[in-house]
Length: 362
Image (cartoon, rainbow, N blue to C red; front, top):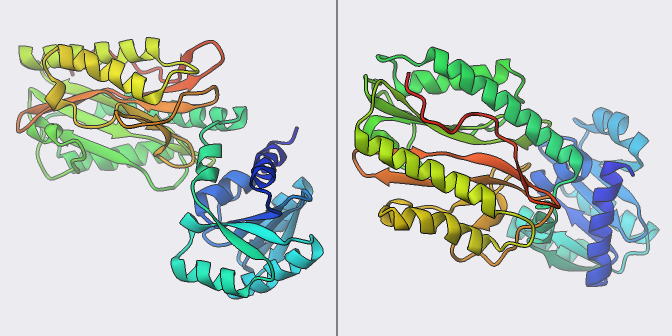
């Protein structure tokens, strides 16, 4: 079955469950999911009759017509944003839509009110349902994520040859961006966290002008983007021989990662997975120094469900792709994070990340 048609069918099932006739999708991420086309503006409309409409402005008319018409989409061109409502009312009449879902968390309150007051049909808010649909990946999505991860791993290998004492964190970060692009990543919003020495204890620290010196840990957390899908990996290496306490902390984080990989599978709650990983670190005496969730889903967005945390109500299921990222952070001294990608299959989990987990000392 055509991949995009299958994704639309999942939305149609949502329409059947909510007893509505159509769904208006406005957010960039969900439009990308349903069309595989990157557009900065527009909307996708799916009706219970099975029609798929993509509404774009004239900047995207040619590419939308070329790529989406052969796949069964009906392309409509809006001259300006207010024209969206006129186009929607045409669809309401042609597809006999009496009620519709409008992706409320993908638009402003003012835009929602304009739709609600201007439509010929009843409008109801659609909140997180589409994001939940996206947590289960089809095989095309999984392959895109795997390709992005191969790009990240090639970049990591190149960074091992590049990093030397005397470089600044910003220089390393710039090289990561260059390498990702040269190795085939989309030019997109990268997430990059490159910190060294005592800066590595900051969970979301940003690269600075700090000079990397011999004996420093260097934490690199980054990912590529391929066909709009993201990868992520984190490795903490050392430029020179580290102290024994750092080696001990590194081994604890590595073992927590290995333990988590054996535990996660279809049917396990995200809360239980977090407890398993976090419990190991707590037993080792570093519980207060593990200050973030154990992991989360990834796809078109860097952070998607399920979230592996103490207050999660989600359950891992076949088709999830998640980042598992245990870490220990000793304020003012150093931090260690190891993150890997896992695909949840029918029989267990597949480690998508091929980079070694052992401590690398340059």
